[in-house]
Amino acid sequence: MQRSLIQKEVIPFLKMFGALILATIITDALLHQFELVWVGRWLGIPGVILILMSFFYSMRKRKKISFGKPKNLLILHETLTWMGALMILVHAGIHIYTILPWLALFAMLVNVISGMTGKYLLDRSRRFLAEKKKVYAQQGLSEEAIEKKLFWDATTFDVMKKWRTVHLPITLAFAVLGITHIISILLFWEWK
Image 1 (cartoon, rainbow, N blue to C red):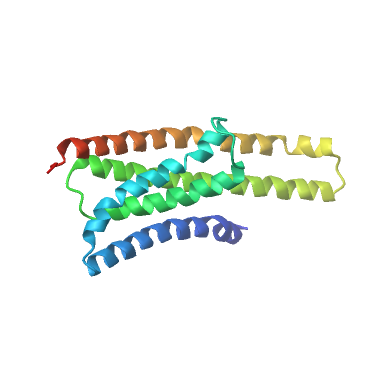
Image 2: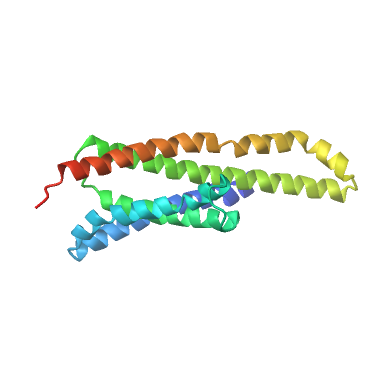
């Protein structure tokens, strides 16, 4: 059971986050190798645009928009956020000289980790409930009896779904720091 848990949840989480960090290192190294470091400076803009586009999922969940299936928009949210985070990480590279960009970058990484953690915790809860329900159904229990037996597990799952109340303030902190960084760049840019 413990080995299965690690294989189903911990390893995919580490692979996904590790792939983000590795892709950042490789992309940054390639830009340096081909003397295209200036490209990294501009990757922050498409990175932010991709992250903003990922909010279609949140807008659909809150009924602000009506197009798209929530499941497809969730996949799009995860993909666009990962790609946007990659671009922003390459944009940041090791060339951060002031505290504000470091804080924004840190908030983004915490936000990405929070999102990935929530994804795996919710998937785990869904699988656990489905497996228990299947076992109870195989034992011949009625739907009502199954629902009674699963009550506390389902309640725990509902609490897990509230994980978003933690993810949202982290996202807000990232947004505030990111916007402040962008405004400071615009204010102190040497317009020539």
